[in-house]
Every structure is written in C-alpha cells, then in structure tokens.
Image (cartoon, rainbow, N blue to C red; front, side, top):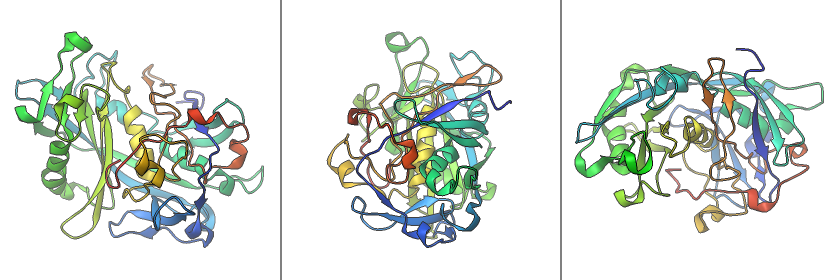
Length: 370
C-alpha cells in the first residue's frame, strides 16, 4: 500500500470546554490501571467529576513513546430462532467482495496504517497526523500542540492496536431476544436486530471468561464483530429498526478478580440501512481510547442528547451520519467516522477557522456504556 492510498480528514472545532492535562504536565509514566490496561490520568477544569483516564501514555511523558495494546477481533456467528444465520466469518452479504466482515475490518485503516490529515470544518488549516492507525491519528490530532514543539519537530507519540483474529464465537439467539428483518420492507439485504442487554450479558458472563486462555484479559481489548446485526436498547424490540438502533457499544465491567475488563461490540453493515462498514467500530474505538472506563460524562451530556458544549473526552461527530471514504488498494471503500477533536486537547492551530456551532454534535451516554 502506498502513502497515497488513503487520505482521511478528521475535523477540529473550537468550543468552550477545556481540558486540564494535570498528569501530562507532570510528565507521568503511563500507569497500569487495576485492569492492567496502560492508561494515564487527567482532569477537566469544570465539566467532569474527578480524574479520568485515557489509554496509552501521557502526551507529555518523556520521549512521547509508543504504547501497543493487544487487540482481539472476535467474529460472532449469530443464529436466530428461525434459522437465519449472520456470520461475520463469511463473505459480507450484499458487498462486492469475497472477504468476510472480520477480514475487511482487519485490513481497514482502523488497524492498518494509512496517511491521515486533519482539517478544520471549513476544510482549511490541514495538518499531517502521520502514517498510522485511525484512533492513533485521532489522539495525535488531539495533542498535536504538544507533539510539535517546533515546525521541524514532530515527536513520536503513538497508541497502537496490535490486532489478531480469534476463532468465531457462535451465539444462538432465543426468539424473545432477536428477530430477522423483513428484507423486502427496508433492504434487499437482510439484517437482524437483537437485544443488546441480552447480548452484552452473554458476552460478559459466558464468552469473555472462556477466552482468557487465548489472551483476552483485562490488559487487552476484545472487539466483537457483528455482520449486519444491529441491537435494540432496554429490551424493547420496537426501538429497532428505527432511530434507536445501536450499531456499536463500548463498556467496562469488573471481573471476578476485581480488575476492569473493557470491550467493544460493533456491527459491520453492508445492507445500506445503517452506518456503513467500519463507521460504528471506528467511532467506538476512538471513544474507548479517550474514555475506556466510561468516566468522562459531562454535565452537558447528562442534560441533553445533543449539546453545543463538547465533552473533553467523548469522541464526537460533526453530524449524525458523517463519514469519510478510504479506497483500499484492493478497491474496497471504507467509511470511518469523521470525528471531532476533543476541544481542550486540540491544537489551537487546527481551530483557527471553526465551523458554526450547529455543526457540533455530542451524543448522550451513560457512564459505563457509551
């Protein structure tokens, strides 16, 4: 792959919330949290209650070195009570490719390096974020003013995901917890809708404990891959299909040892009805990187589903369906989420021409599940 194969754009917008990099300013080492995940701590000046963490090293730590997180892609094979199967290890349905969802994700710029640039929401003030992974480019953009002490110096700060694919996990969904779509009503390509609470509980209590011997431990990130399977919240199937469909989630829970295990579950969509291909996963990984334990909910997020006051930690989108395109060397087009930089952390040089406030969207989120 050449450096011109991918050109991506992250967006920066200047808003009121600011971030206090207390830990970074002290030059702290990355700390191993109770989960074993390498994190560093910081606080926001008014928006967040207490100290929060980000994955990796402090951006002001000596040398700004790289952190690598073992990441396990776990394909799910979802079987509904009517016999319908949605298999993320098989060629992606309705996609012009013979690759499976999990293979396409593994080859995507979420896990493979590509040249990323950042620009403000008017398309100006472009900055090179390096040849790297999507979420690492996002973090480099967040802290670019700390990584470029002079025009000729760019420090090697990285937080990278070392991905490997595990064998598929089969999930049999009872009739009361999931159903297949009426393909003719919404899309020529079928999809499933399953109860997120039921799925999450199965992953936490049954699947994840069984994967410890394969390296899925609190110091690592497990990523569960769905293929054309969306999720409905609160045990209410009437909410999805519809605007309440969940296409990706990240969270954390306490294991038997007391350590916090983080995880992500995301849909790879090829039906054309939901966020396409890696859009949901890319957003969830960015959000996990800036708030792995769900500690960073702001008062604005608690009060409203959308707010003109950006969270200092929530990875935000400029609009509800905003993605940009990557055309891979094999011709497959990926659509990662176009994401806003955290307002207080973003380099001011990227925000000299901020967009109007209405371009900013911050999703409401609960503390543990975002």
